[in-house]
Image (cartoon, rainbow, N blue to C red; front, side, top):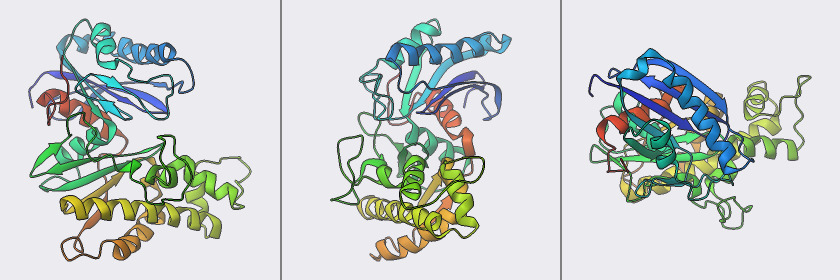
Length: 316
């Protein structure tokens, strides 16, 4: 990587994070705003611009040579547009052009959030040294990315590896994408919590109904909370096994907020893989937690921008 700084944006349904990232992967400055996901597209982009303005106010900004964006998907890297499922105000939204304008014409590289996390994990995380890997972001949604033959594989529009919208329950609940029984509809944080509440789990005195609270209850032995995570793990296992059968990956790396549940998620996930990944060429598949943590999106966006985007996502 070059010695110049890169401005990185990690856009999701809950927050918009920004950072200035050095060539060694060190994050030198951070900024963050909440995502007004149900507001108009212009309201959302103003929050993006506010994050960029905070970064640009630093003297470090003078060393920035490029901008990388990792965005919730789907994205169209060839067109520079984004249509995040959980942000209805953005449909084919020209995010690359708006960021380019906001940064005075700097070159901008766009990748999906799953691809960004994959770039980060392959650069300096759990997928480092593996030629064929699937990396997942399990959070407000479920995204993914692929490394095939030692290279980040983004596909023509930057969405390759987007495991979240593989259907694993043909008669399942409708998903925001228009499908039914998608991995995301079962395994994302909000749906883990929704299922637990629907089946009788109740939060503690603090009223916290997040997936993290469900995970804490599962660790304490609450059977409804345990069952909700087991169902999520089963959906993830089915999606991972299908992907492994299709492209022969060696490792699956799972990150995002839901992965913070630890063995509450990973123990049933490994059991699920023993059920679904039964073919001889996928039985040895390893599943591990991501190492780059909550910075994966930022680090991956920076890596993609510095490289000009593996798999040639858009750069203007």
